[in-house]
Length: 203
Image (cartoon, rainbow, N blue to C red; front, side, top):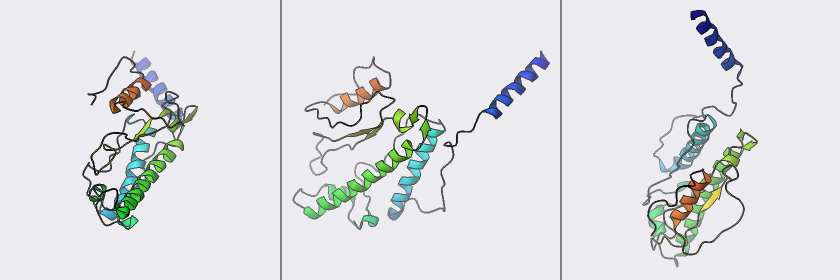
């Protein structure tokens, strides 16, 4: 019995050594240390967080991740965009304030670029018969549709990746009067939890 246990352990070790290492599973390059709280380093923190998230997926350390850039009342400023006022303050300016609206547009475009970087990173990782993006569902959203009115009506959400074919990509869809939680329920269905008929409370 001892000899058999010894030979079995050797066979298991040989099998592990013969298994090719996944080249996509590697720790991200951190580079030189910096003050991660400095406003001007916000873009660097963003890219490191995205790289870390994608590495965790590639190494199968997790299947779910949340990338939260700030709280709902973000005081973040954007010096690399030449914007000195905080995001929260700008979001409360009236629609007639053309300067504020233009700056908010540039801020949103920057965030869109970070989402594009995330999607490109996921799409560069081979997985199964496609890429990691093909087998992932990315949900990009905001807790408000308009900051200056705190409205949650007519909210815009972006979905990327097809969740292994469960989501049809490409179309622009509009659902008048539908609850946001109906969308989250659809996510559960896409992940195989079809017995769930609601998520949270509808408002």
